[in-house]
Length: 611
Ligand code: PLP
Image (tube, rainbow, N blue to C red; front, side):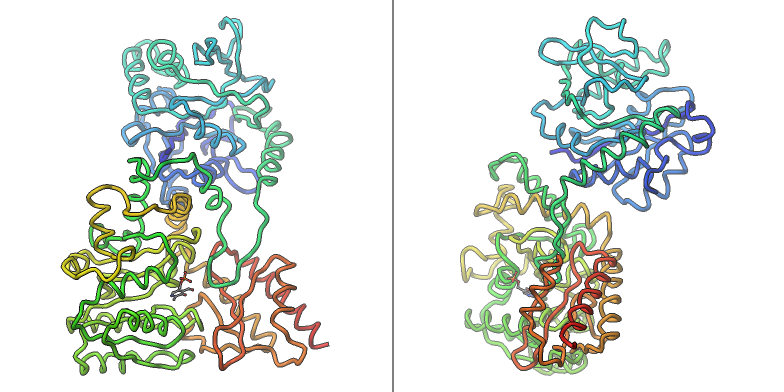
């Protein structure tokens, strides 16, 4: 699995004269986006977790980019004016942990090239194309097995030409080490050594590098005005078209999960088949669990334990594994999911009381706290965000009170996690469930239970009430073996890995702001149309709105649903038996512009039924 990339962006770009006198070449813009940023987005979509950019000329230009994309690390080549790309690569190599992608910064390229290299069975491979006639070609010479023998801008220096260097490669750490050694030996005579020269040397002497040629690959490098012209007129439009025709048909899910996903999350499921018992897959599972845990706690404070299953599996894991016999539990029930938690407790024969509250009104935190203090409870069970209505419960306030009173807290955060910022230590949460298909924006199929580390250890002695869903056993087995006890949903894991990469780039705060922007458009639109919602605005989660049915006699949810579906939006019926409602969720990969379009459609439908 390729987890890192290096982009070499130190060069002066002097052939572009005044255009790049005060800015690196990578900041040339197409459609308002710098080409280096396009490259960063393509790498992220291809599953790269960290991008190291080797800077030099106008290095400060990269600061804003690295702030916007937390996955970027900047490494400056202070000697950029007197050295070449190989020296920049050597500076970046200290950050490299395994196989990685190496790119030049001035490329416009079809993202399919990344996939071609990632899929190539050779660990060292460079991408080549057929003839581009760009006027600045780096020609490649290969042996009969298509391994690199040499490169030059002058055809006549090579015995034969197999293809042209694109400027995207996949390399092992070991090959780069050999390239650096070669550079070190020649620094005196060739201080401006290009990385491709070192690569050709290493490939022909000791570490053969495969040349993966795609004859009609769409790409260009921008070194001078004529390249820029060619990029704008021919290459960029072609790249855009290629990438657009590969997009998956867009369907905006306004149901409260499974949420709308990005194409890159969908595509991440298509991976080389792998036996999940392989160490490599264990690493994927470990990375996923560690990164999830870091989203809700400081390093080392929280463990995430994953199970194949839906959100309810996570809830059942907590109720069946974290409450020992002889405990006294208070379950807050102010909606269908609180009620479900009580039902699970019933099935396991646990002793509990319910704190029942109207799901359309803010939960009275003081009343819950009083009940906790006076009731002799050992455990509290509560839903963070009641998806039934869109009501956000004051979980931190209640759970902190519980912690101060020695009460273990168990929280269903299925539809709150990765939108509402949570710190389990600060918020007093011991155990918390969520799932891969809601705000984290992955595929359905994985439930996770977050555990404060001490809380997890405290349940170790509890007897097992079930087999598959036992929290401590699942945790201990993975710690011991780097494997799960039962077959994990492999492809769902890969999708979740990609979803985590994307969530980290957006940040949880950024995601909640986007969700909030969509929610604002939604409620303002509903108000303009005279529709009412159940939960007062100040208690709404900003993740879902339960809307009272329109009063028109011609209103019919199914007809409205079909009309929306025909126009690319999926909506969801209400879940309250006593009040006729429908629900609009705004979680997932949804942009404010799409919510505005939905509001326009809703108006069209309402105008139609209101005559
Ligand atoms: N808890 C809450 C708060 C939910 O919103 C949901 C589903 O929407 C669940 C539990 C159950 O999740 P699942 O349907 O994935 O089992």
